[in-house]
Image 1 (cartoon, helix red, strand yellow):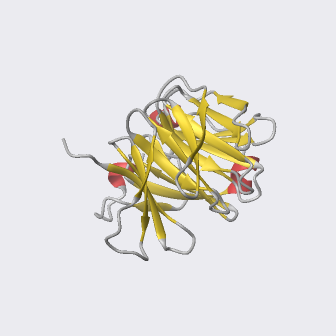
Image 2 (cartoon, helix red, strand yellow; image 1 turned 90 degrees about the vertical axis):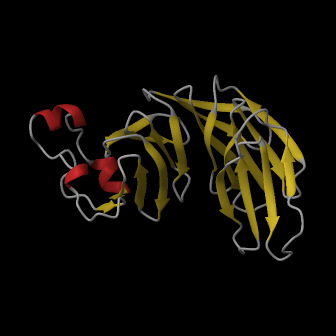
Length: 239
């Protein structure tokens, strides 16, 4: 089968593209030099599922099928390998200042690492499925994880304490990001949702999605929803 690019991100100046591929190689493409061969970041034993630049773009993180996170410098030279997950690592992100890295794995945990030393700092456990997306809030105080178990979890970035579990989707949450004071999520239920961060942290816990749906209650009242199936019909994604 042909190799597939699993993730692509632009540098801040839009001059470079960083990619992760099923062939186990991450690549840096220089858009200012069309046709030039990409810089190859080789070391993973298996697919590279996620890639990201550090905030200052002096470092790169990659997440792989081999259960590792790997850190590289801006030239593509290997810095260190972060080991601790028990299975594939699907997601990786730097903290806003670049001092820490968070990763999400098939082993149902997210882990926080010291980017300078590679030391494991925190294990965020509680999801009932693969952790497929991770993100830091803009101030670095909160970590967001999205999972195959259909939930989002918000964690204290310093202590690792769970602050809130949110059920916003009908299927796996495979994308999650912060935008100022809001959270944006994407799911295999073919919707994206936008929710207020502080309101989510402050809201009272509700009955689970499944029990609320069985009771005939809309599981997600009064929340913006972006229909991604192109039909404009929300009935297939609602209660």
